Image (cartoon, rainbow, N blue to C red; front, top):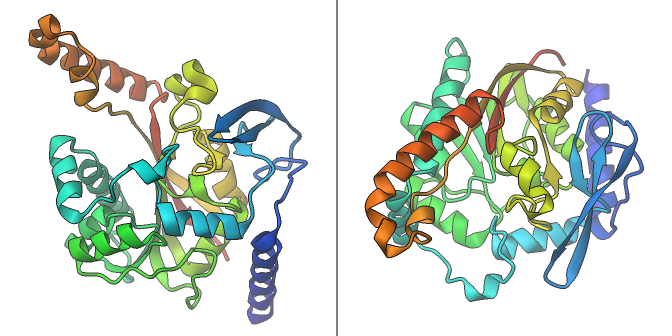
Length: 324
């Protein structure tokens, strides 16, 4: 067992060095090794990113990949934002984050749903160690703390890390998941909320998560749904198709296949769609403002229908580690 673990650690270290200074071009699908084809190109700023898609599992991804150095520098500076011009955006603080959340409840609702599901999947566990990968402003860590989990949080972006510290009282590590070091089989839960779409090497991430989890441990992943009805209509103009911030575009099938490949059993999949009410307030002409409550009700009902047909904007996938 120890010999096998040493080989795995050497393999991860080798992959990390490979990505450090070089771009990588994939010739086959990183999820299932099937053939791939060009899907679209997306221009962001002065750069044009090529997007390939797997002919079998439907995983879509930026190809070639940027270097790991580029990714680490990008997130250290910009966090998880995917705006074309970051320099024009004022850095948030705890107060502005909480005001935004009050005006548009989003992260708190998502955190409550995710943590409630995780808690139900770990109700018989003796271990309460919880790794929050890319904790952002700390909403998920805060909710996990409130139900008794012992949290280790990682966050590369300095601004987000400081806000998370204020919100939770934790000291998130200024560390990428690739560089995070910990004894294997430490955690009952590994959470990747809105972060795997940013990962450079998806196989390295899921393999590492598996090694960090105890037997029967839970991995919980939340990310944009590449199989959503909105993406099917908008194609590369979908706001979630935003390289270099987002590099990976999963549907439930491709994400489930990736997890199963690394020894996880899929426990549950949730579809979640939400549009801010302010999206309509800003666009409605003045004479139509009184109709806003009706429009919001119709929109909410429509989004629930979309989720019921498994075409929602966001997917939450929960996997259980099944074997070593």
